[in-house]
Length: 387
Image (cartoon, rainbow, N blue to C red; front, side, top):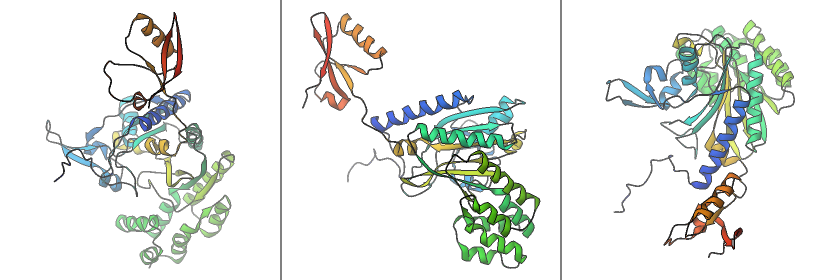
């Protein structure tokens, strides 16, 4: 029987040099862009006690979280499946600032199951969050920053779907659903299982049932908002939600916006506007975000908050890679003059690989496509001629 000790678990994979470099280049570019907009970089821990890691995050995150027992304390710990709750904890409990706080992050998360077909269980999550401002101005800033970030990756955004969880919450509240019934209806709507939605809404007021049944049809351009105003029952929460979406449509008219009033991803901790970005080449959303006010309440301090996150692995896959520039081989034997020239070239941004004696492989495998050659007292760079 073949030795399989080296095999990785399903949906877990190594990142090899070319892809790793692309991911690292994007990570630096994105974090630098976030920093230019005033976002401060933080690094939350990979592990936390479960009661802290899952506080306020809902049942879905609990199911996605790997759990283990801490050998020091005997308490249950979890490997983070989402960094956003950790950022909320840091804002509420550690930084404890009164005004607006902008935070960004990048780190691995681990999922018990892949999110979709061919998805990894170890996304590299990168994102930005704004705390302390309850107005739509923060949501507008977050969506614009997301659009800029995707452009920086060379990804053309085909559409940014906007929704608002306040509409669904208002309808289920008017229907007086129990928490379990609301959860079932939420799952049915997310799965677009209309027979289940029809069955789950039997017995409630006709106008509320009709609104819940029409919710999945309220998808498209800005005209959807006018149609929603006609078809949905009047309530302060629904009117406020539609007003928010109208204002976003006005402020972000230059972006490829669409509206989906039945998209409830993040419903368990979102409190208002929610958004998802899409591009050609990926049927799934490449970025998710929204407002999650009061998330920090579980950590002792309720704060308005909004932001977004993306998987850096997926961004690197979708980003136009181009042909990476090769390295310069500095041949053996080494001396002070060669080291000085290598230092000069590296300062100009070149990659210079020092050759080692008795090398048996192909230097092109190491990424070299040129070679440094001494010509008297001068150095010249020639194409590497190697089979």
